[in-house]
Amino acid sequence: MRADARRNYDRIVEVAREVFREQGYDASLDEVAKRAGVGPGTLYRHFPKRENLLDAIMQSWVAKVSETADKALAHEGSDRELLLNWFQEYVGLISQHRGGPAKITSAMGDPASPIMTKCQVLAQANERVIDRLREDGCLRADVDTLQVCRLVGGVATVADQGELDPEAVRPMLEVVADGLLK
Amino acid sequence: MRADARRNYDRIVEVAREVFREQGYDASLDEVAKRAGVGPGTLYRHFPKRENLLDAIMQSWVAKVSETADKALAHEGSDRELLLNWFQEYVGLISQHRGGPAKITSAMGDPASPIMTKCQVLAQANERVIDRLREDGCLRADVDTLQVCRLVGGVATVADQGELDPEAVRPMLEVVADGLLK
DNA sequence: TTGCTAACCGGAGACCGTCTCCGTATCGTG
DNA sequence: CACGATACGGAGACGGTCTCCGGTTAGCAA
Image (cartoon, rainbow over the protein chains, first blue to last red):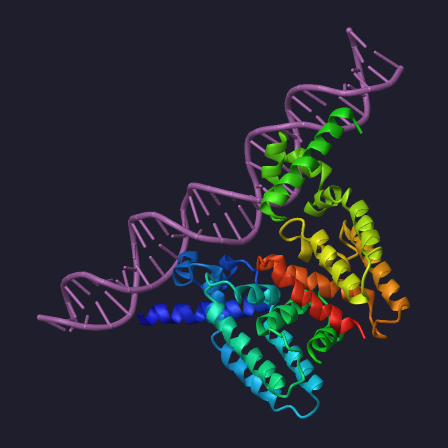
């Protein structure tokens, strides 16, 4: 990759992160290109689909995911608190910008999506937490980890679309947690 | 309202119902106008915003909602089965076309949405079921009916966006139900 | 340094969906 | 039948997506 291409690439990713945070995942890509000081052509050559751009943005995100799961697993307290705490972190991780929860949750099971592998990292982080609780024997028998992702993703999605604040989200996560625990 | 206006109005609603069913809630409105044999101007005069059209489409829906709740309440069986059955019906009601679950669930708490009153009907139907179970004393103390709508709506939303089949939805509804029941 | 070529840029513009404006046509009443 | 109120519909402005290709530049080789 040529140096100027590299510069533009990085610039676009940086700007896109900012624009998505401000305006959500539906923001105009031409706007991103304009702010990055490049033509639309340049943007679309580097990122043919919107999701490719999202993929690049999420590069640093995967490290944060694992790290967050580690912290959650180190949590002192009851199983319920551990699970609930993780769920809240999970919601935070996928709610970086508007439209994120829906996008990430649906990409999780879509092999055609460029961000699927990144979503898998999240799914694996979740699995680590679930497995830990399963070992403790406090989970119901038939708990499927992908289902857990979908449930928590669903809560995050409605919260995102309804612009709910975290205080309204917590009780919903409690219901999900209680439904999973023995 | 003039007779020709009435005719066009009805025609548009009928066609829109069909198009939304085929292509989801994001379908092109010009396409709807074209199929209905009217100009875009006519469509947008009758329905200034997309949601006004949805509102008209849902006219007959409200009756079905109450009816469905009645049937669910008449259900023979355990409390859990009653709740689970209602949840499944609920998901079916809001999943008539792609994009429906998200739209309806977020409109429920949005006073600016033209379809809010219709969503309230659904919320009230849900409340009837929840109240009935509360009377039976099988629900946790702090169950909020709006939260229940959001939870089930969230499950329906991820199912809609991930194109999951009903068999994948059921276990998620079970988790929610179990989290609500004592 | 210079010259060359593959790699890259960027903007004009095609395409699509939303929505408006206003000249024209139609209804239905007197 | 005539006339005013009402409604129609299509041309077109607008904004977003994405492509194509003539022009430019980086970086290497001599």
